[in-house]
Length: 330
Image 1 (tube, rainbow, N blue to C red):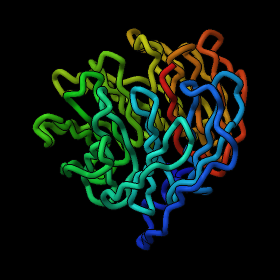
Image 2: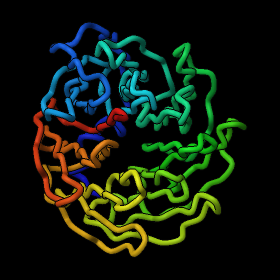
Image 3: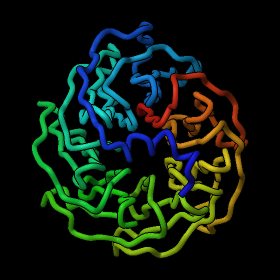
């Protein structure tokens, strides 16, 4: 694990003093775009805001105030809601995507670090890094309906496409917890390599990708057997993983290299190393055209990669310390 480069996310994780400040659920700074389902949402950790990027034009069309230190974002399958984990407020802000206004703030466990939404949109799952748990939110009532114990210090979370499984990456013990969503409990623990800061899952759910930020390796987990079946070599400080909508290639953000690795998932061959901004963290893919959105925490920007040329086609300026990005379905 790096030190200086981990400062944006590490500050809130190691801090002992946590305060719950009143959350802001006021109107956006800029008006919402008329195009409702073509936006990318960027959590700006140092600004307590979410930047809304119009993926068609590449411009920021709104800035939404949320809770204290937003570090993760997820979009509902229908694109109507955006869930933002506010790590130092112990809340999740729920943004109405049609108006870009916070519709609710949901109290969850200590130091929420990641959020994902079930395939049917009925539940949101929140990894609480300070509580070693996952909060389960009913998205109709915006209330917590359950808490599930997982491994030590979960910083990442991913939902399987079928809805039966949710996975957390636990940096405290170097494991992945496998949650059976119907039973509401952890049913398996997978030991992986190093420190799993991010998680990525293929569109069919058969493979889970677990990057180790302390190295250039990504563990590949067979989700049927809940076991590591191989590794992918990426760049230094492998942080997050996303796949194309057909499952290959796999994209890996390399925090220490300022690059994104493009890897063919079957042969595990590196197809390209794309230079992006400073300290890239989160990745998200535009389902419509396959473009890859990368948050550059150190340069307050988002790089957009063309999947055909494996080159950055635009760089979008956003708020301070952009930590996470999520895209609407087209």
